[in-house]
Length: 241
Image (cartoon, rainbow, N blue to C red; front, side, top):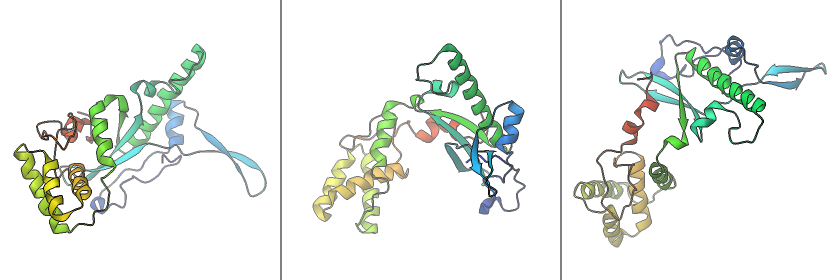
């Protein structure tokens, strides 16, 4: 939520920021005024029966809370679109006249500057993230993992820890990890849970694999390169590189 009026830093109240002089966030009304951008307003009914227009909060996409190498937290704002071109023009895929297109381009530019200025007032960096900048293989791998990353497992915790260790050894030895799941299932049953545990370990980064290649557990998993936190490290930096 981007507040119309001046508000506290998003990290205010975090245990690791206790005692730190965190700057406030300028309200979107102030930032819009500086940009010459018409702030969005909504009509409300007042107690005396009159109606009035008031500034409405804008909605952001993702505000990430990160832990820096110094041990202090920081925030990074992500603004997300399906295509990079959508950042430069509102309703990018819609048919429109040249006049409307220019209006939509101006609106998109100012709306972007509004959000960037809002967070920059508190020292928070804004990053533009678009789906078309992500490799299709990476998207497919994340889709595969997401479906099981919070699946509850009923197997004994110690058994699952031993299984994870066996999976890690299999990866190091070039053995397909599905074979480990099959062997454990013959002893303990619940093959689906063992398979889910493989995907959960990858999701939780207990098992780091190459996301630039398809994650196929019936084949040896690659661990060389393709670490998403390295490939997309720029998206998580406190300041631009």
